[in-house]
Image 1: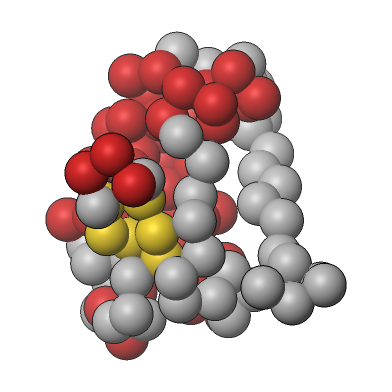
Image 2: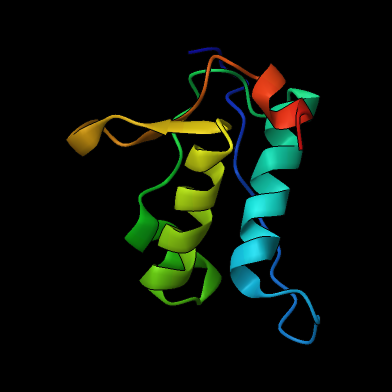
Length: 93
């Protein structure tokens, strides 16, 4: 890893009409697409990110499932979730 490892900083707007899971999904997809989250970047655990954002774990899990279905991330069992090598998949949206 480089000394300038990227960090995942998400902002959830509770007043937004957009559902929190969709806010998480969109922000991760956008960062994967623009390269600020490189291929192979390890995402926080569902519980860890949920705690950090003040969301329910199911909310983050739903976002991760949607991202995986879109090919933006891949989940490797107990190893965690990572930005997928097929970054072009994010462009298909």
